[in-house]
Image (cartoon, rainbow, N blue to C red; front, side):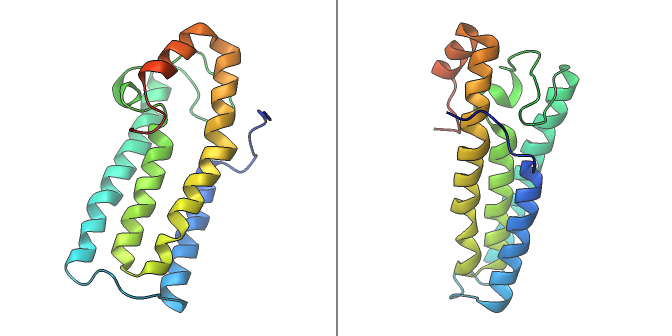
Amino acid sequence: MNTSIPRIPPPIYFLIGLIVMILLSSFIPIGRWLHYPWRYLGIIFLVLGFSLSLGSGLYFRRLGTNPRPGAKATLIVTTGPFKYTRNPMYLGLTTMLIGIAVLLGTFSPVLVVPIFFILVQTQFVLREEKLMEQWFGQPYLEYKKKTPRWLI
């Protein structure tokens, strides 16, 4: 498997996804599935995702390892949110996109979420896992066994 990490970082893909979602909702709003006030439930997902993504990145820095995808990790982070998921920063970005889709309330923005998820999975997560296996070997494999990639 190719372990080279794309130059464009995940937050840029997130921003592109956000823009596409807004454009789709504005110009191709396929059916409204949520109406006021239910759309505002998206704020909960947005705040949770933002907190998870930013908090996990700050946690990485506090422990002295670089959160940038593909940068040589100095340790395997297995505490905090990394105790429950191996990818809390990516999970946070995906959760924010879900929140935005809920806020927009039409079906067309929802299409962006699985595309973003697949992109992050194939271009970052799987490649980073291979790098972590090379860098840390058996301790990382043990971490993989007991901690899910996402939440399940």
